[in-house]
Amino acid sequence: MAIAIILVLVVVASVLFHLFAPWHLTPAASNWGSIDTTLLITLIITGIFFIAITVFMAIAVFRFRHRAGSRAVYQPENKKLEGWLIIVTSLGIIGMLAPGLIVYNDFIQVPKDAIELEVVSQQWQWSFRFPGRDGKFGKSDVKWVDATNPFGIDRNDPAGQDDVLVLNNEVRLPINRPVKVLLRSKDVIHNFYVPQMRANMDMVPGMVPYFWFTPTKLGKFEVLCLEYCGLGHYNMRGHLIVEEQEAFDRWLASQPTFAQTLASAATPSRDSLLEKGRQLVESHGCRACHSQDGSASLGPSWKDLYGRTEQLADGSRVQVDETYLKSAILEPTARRVQGYPPVMVAYTFTQDELGAVVAFIKSLSAAGQKEQVPASEAAGPGDDRVAQGQRLAGSMGCLACHSLDGSQAVGPSWQGLYGKMETLVDGTQVKVDEAYLKECVLTPAARRVKGYPPVMPVFTPSDKELDALVAFIKSKSNVDADTGKVEPGKSPQ
Image (cartoon, rainbow, N blue to C red; front, side):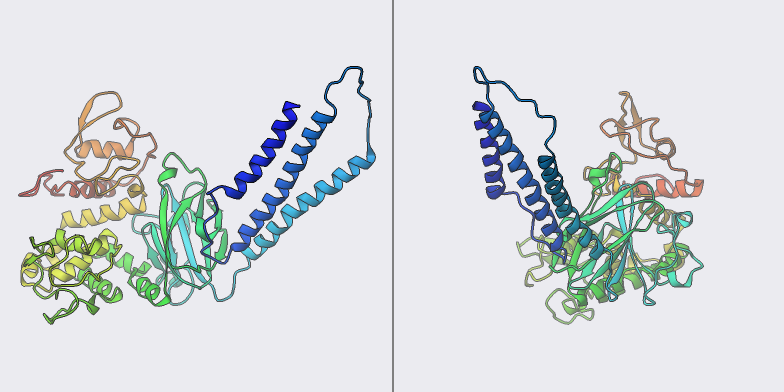
């Protein structure tokens, strides 16, 4: 009797928990509300079977409980009952499978007017590619992947020269435009998933599966990997920003093409940096609020701004240097200049983009121009190696596990790492110098820093690439890439 009551209570509690539980799916931000409907149908069918079977068990326990003098009757088979079980079970399975098959068929029937987005995954980061003005992707293959070509695009394919590359974990899409998502993996199986879009699919090395969706809500949504892809799997996150078509077009125009990245890698110069900064300023609408000729506007004029001392809204004063400019772009409300309204939005530039914008602002001030050197000198050996090392860090996936700002990640942060004393897993201590950094890249398991998992794969860069990577790490500790000495007035962090 008690068991029968418990079974009935389990059914009642399960139904009530489903009806009143606070955990429900967030509203869909795409056209795939049909996926929610499919899940609901599956839940209802399995719920009916759960209730029916559990209640039957409770009735059977109560009705056929032990009673003195009663005997069980052996019944070898019941064809009528078996027939009904086969029919009901088959209908239940069909009811669960049919909606899913219909949805999946729609899932891969891409509208003709859909824009294309290629998602490239590797442990443990995302990158993205859009076709250029010709509307066609260039051919790609992992055999063409290198430090200057992380997407593995065929350099000899004309269709790939204008492909737009997004070398970070954030991508943007226009609202109410269907998007065909092509999926590529450079190493192991991953899965591209945006929960609010209700769409996800596995990314299998050597294959290019696809699906499509239409973003229907503005906002910023998290991108996740749903396949366990190694110990750094939890850290494989990105963001999808849905915005108006006009804003998306401006953002897309500010991203480099494949041809531009090749040219930049071959001939880095101050002129190209300033041109990139100018393009970013134009595409992000900065000139609408900041004049370049000293005239009044919504925000401070950029003419002779660099090097000046400004009074802030809180009454304090600050010298406008590179650090202040970068913080003003990333967090404009933190230290606002007095006399200007708090209308500037926070921008999410990459470090390269941020440096280019700051360089452009500096070029509009006499103080900034004095600090700049001719283009022939701007790209000295050390600068070349640091720039190459930064590209390598991005293409090899290093920045997925090593932060540049001191924040906690899968591996040690590179900020202030060079020259520091680290404790290894065996209890010994080592100074982080060039020899140790090179050893870590080539044989990462040999002398691992205490407190970090053994997840780093073995890399085989050339000697030149290894030197460039070390130079970039050194630059994060204010160490001169050529001499290895701390820059004047600074110290390793």
